[in-house]
Length: 161
Image (cartoon, rainbow, N blue to C red):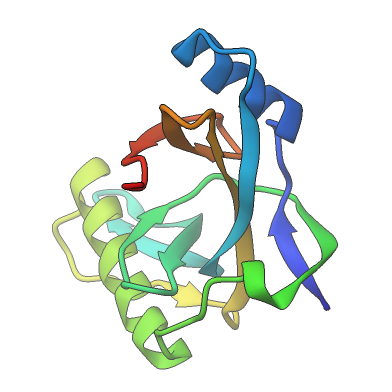
């Protein structure tokens, strides 16, 4: 068992069961498993060139530590949870690969959204590893992956008998 930094949940296990029960119409819905998915979290700042001088903006980015996909992120709180190692998905990316991905994501996102045409470099603090909790919830006929932060669901195939 280990203690991990987990992004604070807004949806709880009972909410996940209710969401899937409403979708399936069944009262026999249960949590099959809890999974913790790893992300590299980057926080930092950028100095952006503009017509009237330079301005600084804070940036935050999450990089999926399994396949390297990333996105800019809002500020979030972290809780430390004790969990069983078997429910933790293994990290496959190195910190250097994640940092390169974060540089690309933030540069592309800010350049596009703020219409910055001059070159700039984000300056990140050291990456931290955080986990996001997901539940696999089902009733035997339907299964779904439920996100603990926003309650979004992704349907999963039911295992063959």
